[in-house]
Length: 228
Image (spheres, rainbow, N blue to C red):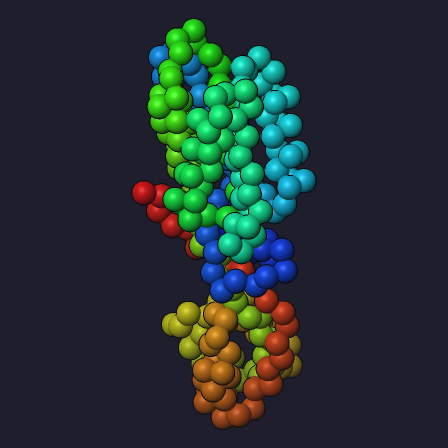
């Protein structure tokens, strides 16, 4: 999915959060420390199965790597989470990657770091820093978005009022998703969750009560955010 597009699927497994943060898309980054290469791969995932397929994909693409350390979390509060050291000393790889995910405040995200050993041992502290750094670089490459819950409202109104209504919509926090111009006009509008009543009040004012609105589900709107 391209950053900034609408996400009609609720990636929080049935729990509609008003807002959550995740990665914009796939990301890849590399860092080299003491001759070892750490390649980080990032992807948006929704469950254990998608994460497992992603990890298997990276292993297949990088068959010669010595380790494939990974972490991921998903769900409204990140309740589905896993971390794997894949042969590195316990707590030196998967956990640092997971901590980067938590610190960034994102969900529905998996990170795999493939390590090509360069012959120099880094020690526990060195490994923790290396895997954490690789994970952070991968997230920066992927980019972040805030997914904000909106209610989809379809409104029918007289043709002669369409110009005024469209102007009013575009000066507010509503998103005009679709417009159909026939004998009457139909606007499909994304309204931030919780603003449905003010939206209808405004529509009544702009059309002297002639507009007829119907709620037609929900959608998440993705807003890019800066990675610090």
